[in-house]
Image 1 (spheres, rainbow, N blue to C red):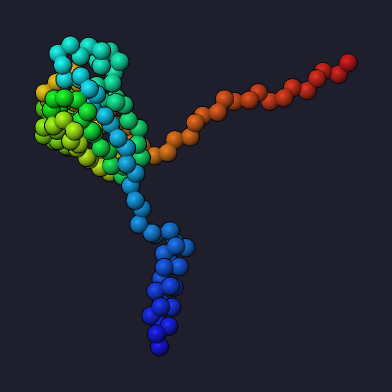
Image 2: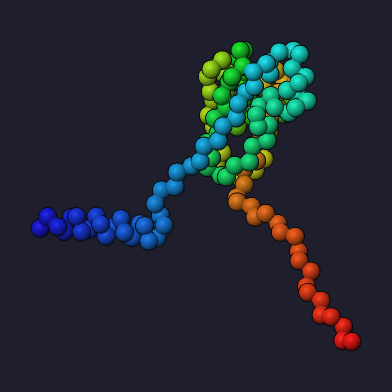
Length: 148
């Protein structure tokens, strides 16, 4: 009698494996808030586009993004652009102090701009999309030599 529950459990697990309905675990990606990004002389990180590094992050839907503050001052991670009326409506970290982090999971495909409300020159973008194939150059069809 003890084998029936075990057999049923084994059968259910086998069915789940065959159908591919096992729960999927999201990926994790990291963005670093650069040291010195909050200084008023931060032209270097603006020119290098690495106040948030990477400044453009490409991820799959369901990816959890962690912003880690390695700077000596506090920052925010706020969705949108500073000029948007709805800035911060998708996510807003509040102040992220030195050594702390903020996490947000991107469920839907799209392009998401973000910035630091304290230091508005700090901008970044998360591009969420499916897997993309790298285009391959077309190879010309072989030519047949002309008869002599």
